[in-house]
Length: 196
Ligand code: SME
Image (tube, rainbow, N blue to C red):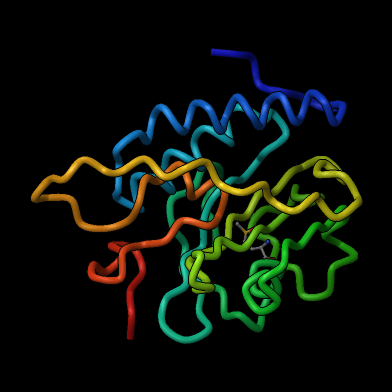
């Protein structure tokens, strides 16, 4: 396993590490269609690949305008975040990545840990436009994710057809989650997305 990328890191080093994570996820999640397993694996791989990721995890959309914590790595995170609150809520409301070089300058930032200095929150949106979750990453380093809006996500790799299995409950191959355009099959509920 590669040593985690630490700061300072060049854009090329970040890109290389990101691609390594994406390739690892494509292999780890091949044929997997469970969303909780996918989120847990994505959080784990990202967290351990980047040494300056101090909290890495998902908040899932539950009901109307509420985010509820999902799989994560790092210290305990707050359990629920209304769309009206915090950096995560801003990502959910706007459906745009929130890049925060200095959390102390972000009005209504929710500090789950006193050491957090910068944060990035990426909305996870299905191809049909459904907001599924947000991916939240905190760092104890200032401007750890840069201070310019990140480039748009590249189109996802072609989906790998999940192996048919009776216990399979929902979701396409989960590595697409990293590209935040995965689409849960309409005929099956997404295990981790609780409706009202
Ligand atoms: N900082 C986030 C809250 C989640 S904890 O950082 C894990 C926010 O302001 O929405």
